[in-house]
Length: 361
Ligand code: GDD
Ligand code: MG
Image (cartoon, rainbow, N blue to C red; front, side, top):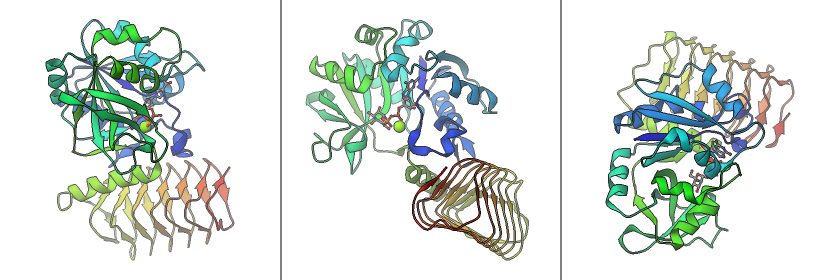
């Protein structure tokens, strides 16, 4: 069976970090999400993945050094400047997908699911689509399903208004689809699978659910992206070997690339992930944060709950607080404080405190 990975969205909620890379390339414990997904598909017996991309995402993916393992990779392109939506992107890949059932995965999902189990379940039902369902507290950001008898979905509502959700069972963005699905999607048009196709299939009794209660996150929001790294750090507590050159103290759980250097008096962790060639000065404190490759953090700085993009330069005595997102190559000058929730656009230079949550462009 082939898998289609949807990767042509615009990731607006992860800007400014997503200006320089699509969500599918965001590092999770220093490894691109795409690699985690391919490894997991491979374990479920999938040998070929088709990436449904736009020209921008394709450019980044092809220039990145992700490892595809044994997986055969093909690309299916949305037309320039004409995003096809989730349904349109599936229709666009019809020829590449062939005549068999296939798997579809939203490219911004991190999960521990065994795809083979979902495939097996789909084959046992008379379903056009079997969708994986997870339980969440607030379903309003997701597609929501109302389950009926024998795993049939009676109703599907995409992003219901708060309080109007038919249940807490949400669409996890993982589907097994039968070839028949193509009859429901018009070619060459922007089509939302979730808004236009799933509600119709539910009405016709051809939409089935598979409940999954393992690890699952959509990394599309900064908080969720930080959270999944945190969950993985917890699950690997005690098993992570951090080889640190220089001095400094590690408060587990922490995951550092082996190339990093940390000077004396600095404390890393708990819950910090430091990428390749990160350079940490003296008396620095970093916790609950993700530091992308090539970042320089100068002496006496404090970072808590932030995501710091590639090649950022953090000056001396800087304070970066919760939910700050710093775009690639930005420079934060000496002694600058950034309040909670500040985002800084790529390559921006900041020499004054930012005292309230806002995006500096
Ligand atoms: N090729 C292509 N073209 N891919 C697209 C397009 C498009 O026009 N639009 C979105 N995608 C890809 C995105 O890159 C992402 O991997 C996936 O489709 C889902 O898009 P998101 O923008 O992340 O949607 P969402 O998170 O708001 O909602 C979707 O995922 C939820 C689960 O996380 C829906 O499927 C919801 O029903 C679901 O609950
Ligand atoms: Mg998403």
